[in-house]
Amino acid sequence: MTEEAVTRDELRQVAVVTGAGSGIGRAVAIGLARAGFVVALAGRREAALAETASRIGADAGMPIPTDITDEAAVARLFDRAAQRFGRVDVLFNNAGVSSFTTPFDEITLADWQSVIDVNLTGMFLAAREAFRHMRLQRPVGGIIINNGSISAHVPRPQAAPYTVSKHAITGLTKQIALDGRSHRVRCGQIDIGNAASAMTAGMATGMLQADGSTRPEPTMAVESVVRAVVLMATMPEDAAVFDLTVAAADMPFVGRG
Image (cartoon, rainbow, N blue to C red; front, side):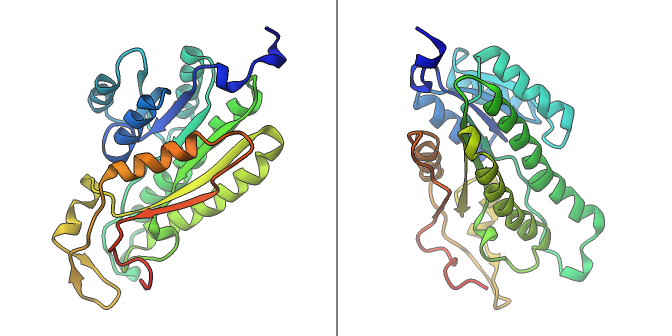
């Protein structure tokens, strides 16, 4: 079979998932493996990644401890994934942190920078390396899925670092989608609202609302996020999901702010 005759469907699909040690990242990694992908698992905590890998199986999951804010470490992540599995077809660009509720004029530069470093710069570094591999591999191309947030549309009160970082991801996503056209690199953004995870555990007791009150908010099962990401990751080459919002049906999203 000639190189030109080989299609991506005839190769083993390879995904890289950042933030794969817990929460949405772990759930999506397991979901992608069930959908037939082999998965490179990135995150800071080696033991947590090993736990995710144990749920996937050694033949389909490869833990690669990675600090997403470290440029050299991110490059090694993708090089190791490509060396082990042969290529990179999908990046679920998921690693992120939340910010503490803080009045705008009390936000310190250190707190601002810590959120931007992970949520924006880290996602840029991962997307850049994925793009590079997808552009140069044969067959060319792949899919980058950036994890945005409902906060990419409307802010929560007193959450400026997080809100700004997620709005910026929307610009990053659109730029990658544009620059990737000639290389068959597609890029989309999933904006998630109130998926049940450790990050959203406080929603059951109460979240600050735009009117100044604190009220509990409903959550949805993380499996709904998994189904959405797998859909985005398995679209045929002539189609792309550029943006997708999935949220708890009764959460205060429409009309927030």
